[in-house]
Image (cartoon, rainbow, N blue to C red; front, side, top):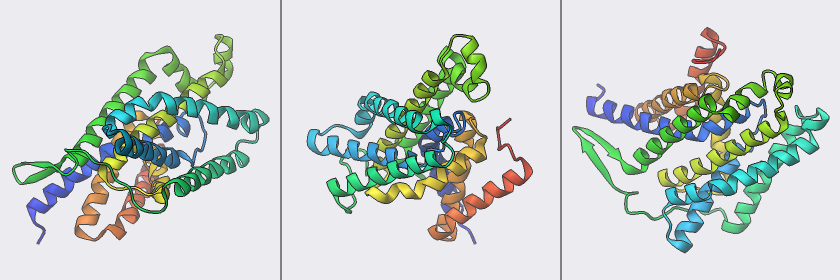
Length: 290
């Protein structure tokens, strides 16, 4: 018989994990969902954000959340440079489909190798007073290491949603993949808009990396575990839908938490992708896709 206490704790943990999953997937929702750029190197920038938080925590004693915020402009600039290389080398020539994919695969490999050479294969973790703490609401235990990433993930999701829906550049980003010629007629450079959007996706990835190292230790290759997951969340939620990304992240978070609790963690990915296939069979555009 399933314990009610265990069930409630698994559901709450899944919701908290889902908020973090949404934060990790937001960048893909922008680059893949809105720009049609298959950035499979996205998890590498997440891990790079984790190691930046680790380095600043170890050598300067900075809180990882503060590090994530401080380094967001740095990763935004890095995203600008990566997109410029991608555009000049592939997109401008119309070769982004296959060769562009190889470019991002190479970027993923380079970032991973650099981190391996710098930090080795050992797991790294940060030190913060709240990491090992938790509190209880009735029978449900809530760990700060899950609560804080979820809350920050919700704030990032809300901020990105408001930016895309309420600002000129945000609406231009949503329009660039639909009708770039119309943007040109309005005097807007689609390449500039794509550059801003892609850089924004890398900036959110780095901030998600600071959240990841709060949840648990990281090592350079751990990003591979998130490649399939983030694309699944974006497709499940609906291509380019920020709110859909949040809903899908929470659904997969709950599914994985319940599966890990009652059947073992090895079944969690299978259940998550099973949910994806079922939803797409009923609604091919995703939960909140158009």
